[in-house]
Length: 393
Image 1: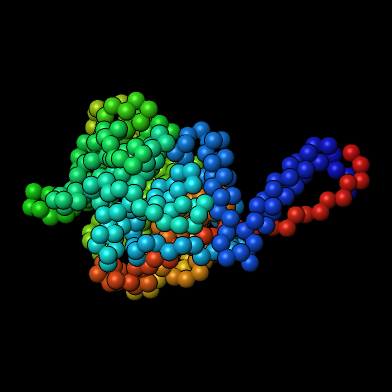
Image 2: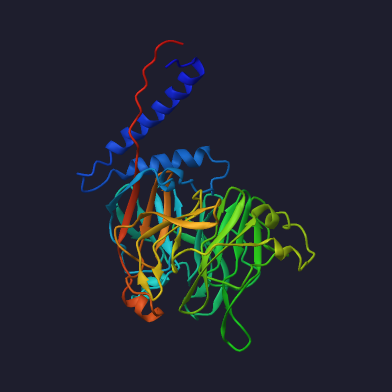
């Protein structure tokens, strides 16, 4: 077999990459009781520095290609059982809040996991719970939720400055609890959530607000609305599309519908004040996920979900990816055990961390009392390096 110089260059680049990855994997030797998490954090920092926007989550092609075997490692348990939480990842920290728990005070806390020490800590309370943690411009923020004192829903956007919560970024235009939040370049998109109507009944919202965080002045509504009113979902962006994979629109029930829309169709309307009923037709409904109460894998390409439950409310361990060619979902792996309502933090391009969840999901009450403290890290086992014999150039 003859190999050209161009082919040799490509093969050498492949070998160098694989060797580097194998060296990293050796640091995660399965015999270690505590994985060397600083390596994960350093890789994450490197990816952030190379990313066009610091808020863009890492892609997970290695983990979700179906070609690599997953290795799971048990990490430190959550300080309290929680499910349906939200997470934000920055540097060597994972921030967890906004979820439900049988320990009521846990719902008001912001927990922080340190990947360098495999330990949990706690931030000062931001004053509102059921909000969504997010990283905007390198700062941790909590968006929306309910006021801790009065329990009224709020439009607060609290920004962490050292150990103090401030109003660095403007508040939302309207109150909303548990909305979907995602960043695309300079735009922060906040969609849906829940609020109380004039009859004091909790209802789902369908409007979308956008903040251009670099100019940091005010939020604006766009003319595109969600395909249906919804809350309790984690939107993600993949190949130019904003995906929604599962949501709630009433307490105690979860839908498994999937929608997508070109994200530029939303952000392009940031400076437009006009309203239109036609723009909402740009949403496309895709094949529903196989399971309910799943967790979105942030930044994954192709889109992916983990865990969830099957009707009638049986927790599953499935990892599913979306196949655009067939408009269907296929199972390509599994968690160590079944869980519904977990949350996923994307750490590097081949590592995710799955946090919390439930072992029963038939009612919100049962979920609270069967929610988990478990946290597990899944890392892709890399394929073997192919040997190459060079005859000449």
